Image 1 (tube, rainbow, N blue to C red):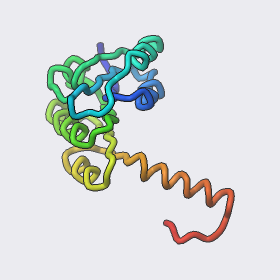
Image 2 (cartoon, helix red, strand yellow):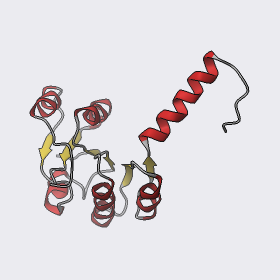
Image 3 (cartoon, rainbow, N blue to C red):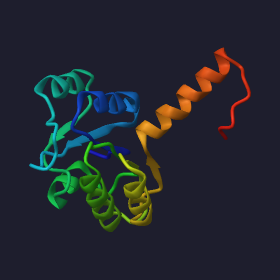
Image 4 (cartoon, rainbow, N blue to C red):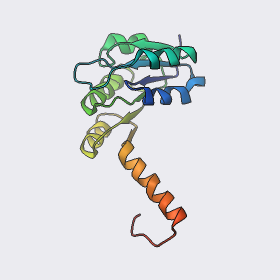
Length: 150
């Protein structure tokens, strides 16, 4: 299977990320480490399979799981696990297994975002920060007052 994007996720909300990119022939690897607070649910796995999205259940921190997902021949990986240390490790591992890969990684805190970016991620998303920016834009749209936010 030639995948063009791998999505590493543990939560059903992050599975929505996989569904958005579905036309790109996605493999979805789930981290199942003891340090992760949320586990992939059978329901979210079933949902992805129903949408004909290939799913690989396993610990995405393991080289063999990433290789099974096609890390060595994929064009990109989106790492949206809710554990910054796992995301950092998967970023480093992904870069070492495929130096040309485009990596998008989620971070929960700015300090991890900096470390993840330094370790090889092309893009780092901090959902809480991005959500705050969107909320600020909506407030500005409906209540156009001069704000000191840039």
